[in-house]
Length: 192
Image (tube, rainbow, N blue to C red; front, side, top):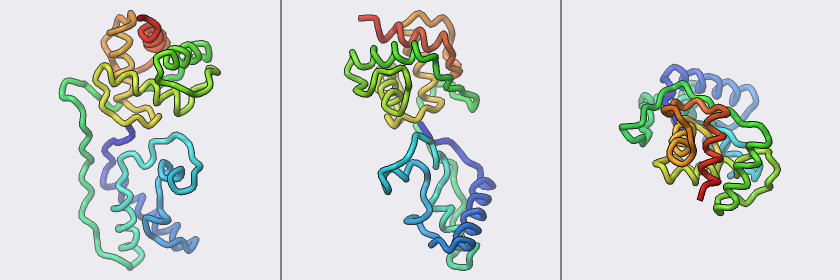
């Protein structure tokens, strides 16, 4: 999860913005000071669930920003990232991680805890630990993404695969999670 192709133009715009911020606010333009949201926790012990930088190549952006500032050479063009996805999985860019109501969130938290995949509060209010428990669970049906608490298309797809295999989900997985997907995911978790 959290890694998808980002165009060269988007990288270029991000580099221009980074160069402007670094110049305007006198910020050193290096990877020590230009970080993605996901890196905030590692550096400062504070942060929140986000996919940033996702498919952005921050090293390229910093190198290009330095070139714009006159302090470096032009980096090689950004190649689209390679994402390990089984060939049989029909991922597409349209996906939706709909969060169910509190009662269903609580039901899933309790079922995950009963399977030893969640140790957080059972309060019907999902956070990173709940999503990590879901990601651990869907490894049983082929999920190969990170256990990072950040949902993406693979998480959505395999929640539905799990709901179909162990619950009573009647449809083909389409990466659009809704009440039916989550109710059947919960049912699958609750079954022996």
